[in-house]
Image (cartoon, rainbow, N blue to C red; front, top):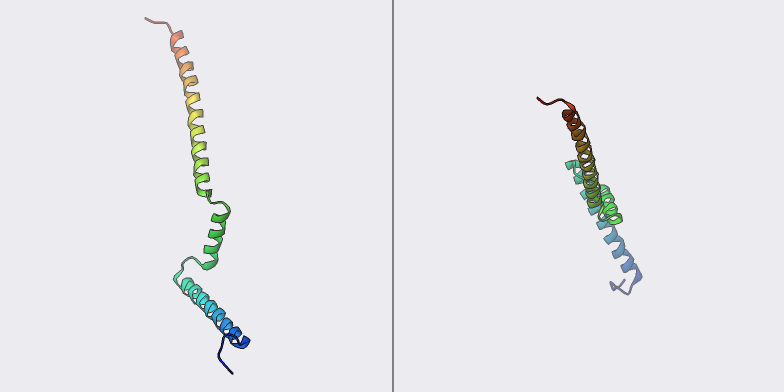
Length: 97
């Protein structure tokens, strides 16, 4: 049997060996990570896919929160003049000395 890349058996064997080595490497890294209580490979892929689907998701959430806080601040400032106007009206109705 000649060891040449033209021989289909050699190409198949080399491909199978490469695939097995890659799978063993992945398995070893997952086993090591589980032992160290770190984030697993599946969790990393899930995060990457979520980031790919919505690349500006964190920024959108932060801007939404900022918008909500600004609206609450505006609403509280709208209430303050009304409260102050009501208290001024009561003060003005009192007789002065």
